Amino acid sequence: MFWILAVITVLGGLTAVTLKNTVHCALAVTVAFAGLALLFLQLDAQFAGFAQILVYIGAVAILVVFAILLTRGSDTPTTGVFSRTWFVGLLIAAAVFAVLGWAVLHSAEALPNETAAPAITVQQIGNALMSRYVLPLEIVALLLTAAMLGAVIVAMHEKGEPK
Image (tube, rainbow, N blue to C red; front, top):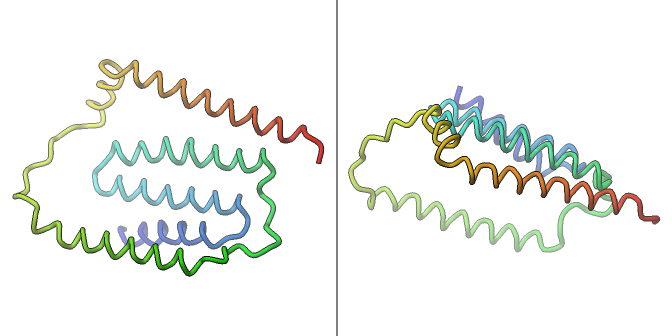
């Protein structure tokens, strides 16, 4: 099951960076997000998996698709998709990957003996969010609502302007 989910996630990410149509790219990113959520759920990280589904698939991906459609950015580019400096970007990405790989391989030596993970359930996290952290949760909800309304207003003004 892990390998199937890993292939779905990687193919979704690769499809997102190789397609030319931005709507199709956003939908491919949604597939990659879904694969990550299922991988979290397979690893018994229920909160991370459900948060991935609710936040990234349910909010971010849908908001990206609507933003692309509202701003008429779904047209296929007529010029090339790749930048002229793609080779420099590839070298920088390879250097970052090498540094991160080195850090991961050498971090196992510095880790202390493993301790048992705390047994926190999704219900305990939900109870904490609805009691102790209800004010920050509501503030974040208002902030995200204001950002979405602002994006719609900006998109509507651009749509109404003559070419």
